[in-house]
Image (cartoon, rainbow, N blue to C red; front, top):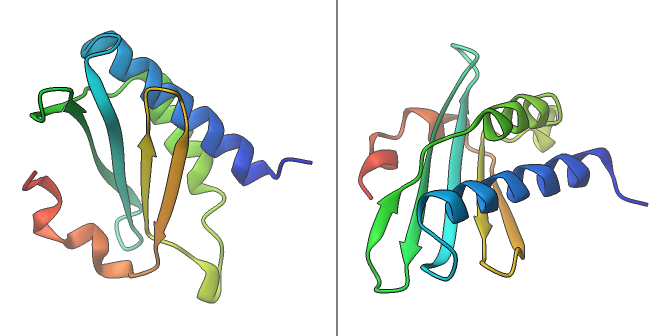
Length: 117
C-alpha cells in the first residue's frame, strides 16, 4: 500500500516531468530537479526547478499549477519534531524515475545559494 506522502511525491514528480517535457522537449533533457524549501517563520516556500539538457547546459523550468498544488499538499506532510523537514529535492529522470531527498535543517530556506545554479 502506498503511503499518502509517497502518493503526493509521485504526483509532484509527474508534474515536474510533464513541465520539463513541455518546456525543454522530449529527449532533450537528462534530469530535472525541484529544490523547494519551507520557511517555518514566514510559513512560505521558495523553490526553483532546473533541468540538465542533453548538451550538459542547465536551464530554468517554470512552475505549473500542478507543481504548486503538489507543494501545498506535501507541506501538510512535513512531519513533526525530529522528523520535520524543511527542504525537499525531487530529481526526475526522463524515464520518470524519481528520487527524493529531505533537508531537516530549518535554516535551509534562508540559504542564499539556492539560486546560484
